[in-house]
Image 1 (cartoon, rainbow over the protein chains, first blue to last red):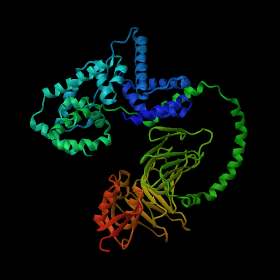
Image 2 (image 1 turned 135 degrees about the vertical axis):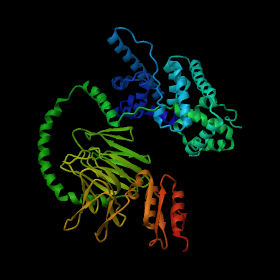
Image 3 (image 1 turned 180 degrees about the vertical axis):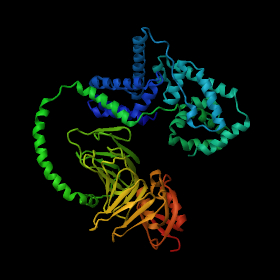
Image 4 (image 1 turned 60 degrees about the vertical axis):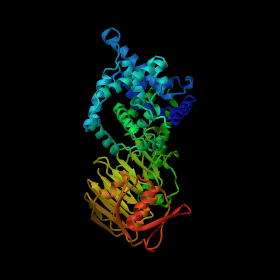
Amino acid sequence: MAEDKKSEYVKVWERFIKGDDDAISFLYFELFDEMLNFGLKYTRDTGIVEDCIQDFFIELFKKQKKLPAVSNIRFYFFSSIKHKVLRELKRRSILQQGNSLPESDFLIDYSFESKLITEETKKHYSRLLKQCISQLNSNQKEAIYLRFNCGMDYMEISTILGINVASSRTLIYRSVKAIKDTIEKNNLTGIVLFNILKLFKVKVDFRE
Amino acid sequence: MNRFDNYKFEDFLLDPDFCAWVMDKKKHFNKDYSAYFEKNPSVYKTALRAKLVLELLKDEKVSIPLTRKIQIWDLVRNAINKTQAPKNWIGRSFKYAAIIVVVVGIASLFYLNMNRDNEIDQYIASYRTDYTETVLKLDNGKEFKIASKKSEIVYNTEGDKIVINNKQYIELSEKKKARQSQLIVPFGKKSKIILEDQSEVWLNAGSQLIYPDIFDGKKREVMLIGEAFFKVAKNKEKPFVVKTGKMRIEVLGTSFNIRAYPDENIEEAVLVEGGISLALKNKIINNKVELRPNQRFVVSNESLDYNVSEVNVEDFTSWIDGVFIFNNEPLKNVLKRVSRYYNLEIIGVGQIGPKFISGKLDLKEDANKVLDAIAVISDGEYFEENGKIIFKLKNE
């Protein structure tokens, strides 16, 4: 994430903890979509995630003057939402079944198909990726999501996953290697690859 | 020597800068990257594969409508307010306030009705072109400046909350609902506003819209200086009225484009769909003109003569998408529109008056490219002098 945005968030946060109520609404609207999407990786129930976001902000208001200075707002919001969603899921499962939650799975659910991929080659890549990702374990999926969707660094990923930095690095590396192996194992013929390139030269010009 | 020289496919995926560039399409990387890739086609091929994978990895995002976000935010705010003790004295003083309001209300209603039709003239008289930022002026004296080139302002259906550019959130006080708010879009910028009735209005550069935060009267009345495209939400009980310097346009629910810049010698309305009824404001006999889709109404400022013709509506509405189409249009007008759009001072010299041109300009390009295109079409040339653009025809 761009550094200037990061420091803008920090400034807004400081205004909020000094008593400016309106400041926090900026962060709410700015980060809502990302928090929602991230929360939806733990449950498919939008209502639960919305409730957790709502709860989170109510708590922020209640503790407003006692809140600490935070240097990485986005990360702080993400980990709070994850924590809340997991706690809520646990609470519900105890209420419903009287037992604890089964080992949760990270619901990474890339909807490649809906991206209107018409070309055979892109479809081919999509299929490979989908197949590859479905074989990753839950931690790997979450790491891939945080890295490639949310653009987080190893430090941030490790904290959210509750592992150390070196492990998060290994986790990403292994996942990327799995993707690479799948793609190279099923490599396309020269002609098809040539077609991708031709297509990309037109569609995604680096000079755009 | 470049760090990409020996990159393999996976190295690209693990490179945070490269990923950030693909994900966010960071502009400042583009130049360095493209120059390098041009010289190294084999690395380029690998990078393209990595780019494709990264783009596929970018999860489809779930997005919920802004109104829902506002709803949830309201729940947060309500939960907070409940924890504070209610203040009783407000309730008591309200009764007295109500009586005063009624008395004042009757007087001002009378006053307003008399002056309503010419209210726009005051705004036209104070029309300024030296704004540098988009400004949202609320009746309570608050002003919000928006620096972005394009902006979006959204009112919720109760008309008591505003969200600017999907992030800045403004709450209007319940007690004092603003009568006339004003959105001012300077040269070089565009804006879209969704009003309380959820009608959508796209404002072109150098335009102003005067509108109430809530439409509580029998009609939904707004005033326009400049150019705007309206997509009016259907409401048969409450007609939507747009007033300009010369025109008064009444609709129930439809989309149309209006152009009424004080510094141009015509005003026009073009109907895209639905139906509108149009009257000239200052005519003694107030004939109403009904427009059908694909018709254009033009009135001249000097004579108040008007005519209606069939047109291709796309020519008049494409500015919303940053394209400017003109068909046998005076060169002078084309230059004026371009100058507004880019906030440039363009001076046409010599015989450009009688020159008519046709063409299509992509306003997403920078100003120089657009001016180059106009120069080619019109067989003219331009140069810069003291920060102004001087445009003339070649044969002079």
